[in-house]
Length: 367
Image (cartoon, rainbow, N blue to C red; front, top):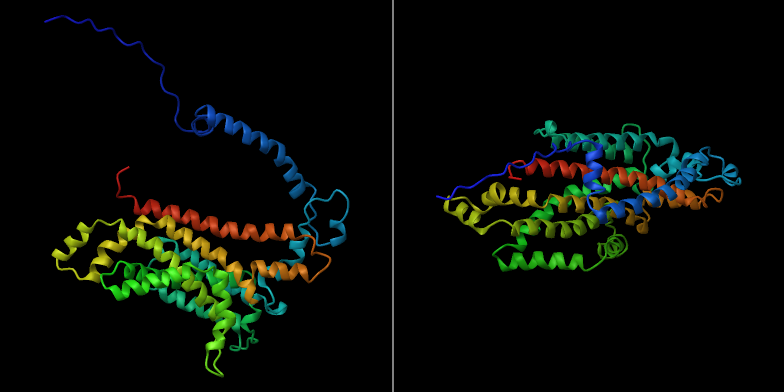
């Protein structure tokens, strides 16, 4: 045998720390030449514009609700418009002296939404609690009982209306979407055709058209003397519209499940609904968590379109508050930034919760 000589490898320096802000910046901001150039370009733009933005938004801003002070030379953002009009923006045309009622109702729903996102509260009594809180919400908002003044639904507005429409639309659209998604995969031609027709019809028109039909055209087809509240009609329109889009997201998850699992379930004697409930739907919904949450966020933002049917949610309440006062109507930018912050807080919270759900459902997968 031929003898071989092995040359020892020269010792190399120990690798640097892979954690910490410096390591993160080196890995994500200066990993290669294109990334470094992009970081320097964006950083330069921020250094140029950020001081100007901070000067306008904070250092030279006017915070007091004095319209004349906002017109003084050198004044930046006029946040006084929010200080002056925040109650009208948040609660719309609801009676001023009764606005504690929508405040309590909104806080109750928001607290329950947060609790519903915590696993420790996923108990059998949670749906019952939702029924009670929603009942409290409608009692406080509508009045007419317990000594509360009656307030018609056309005077509801602002954040309570946005939260109500978004919450109920999502809660009602989700089960409808699951049924429609299963129907589109059904072996029965009649059910499959009906579900396909529903999805294609709804997706073929914008939400504005659906709201217009629900608010103005639908009452024309009702029997004489029978009327349905405009809030209910709008809620049904948003729910059906959202369910059609959400059904396609869920159907994508259903198509990703191997047919072999369904055949194996059939050999075990499981019925169709047992197979869907125990095998197919849990896996399908876990696969499309980002798409589902994207649809939920879209529903929350689409509630701003109800202003066309004279229901003044956040955006409509802002326009009404500023257009009715000549002293503040020129400061819509600050008003829109205020409600944009509200939308961002809700949408960002939903996005972060979606990421938590993804981590939970992916714990059993190999990385």
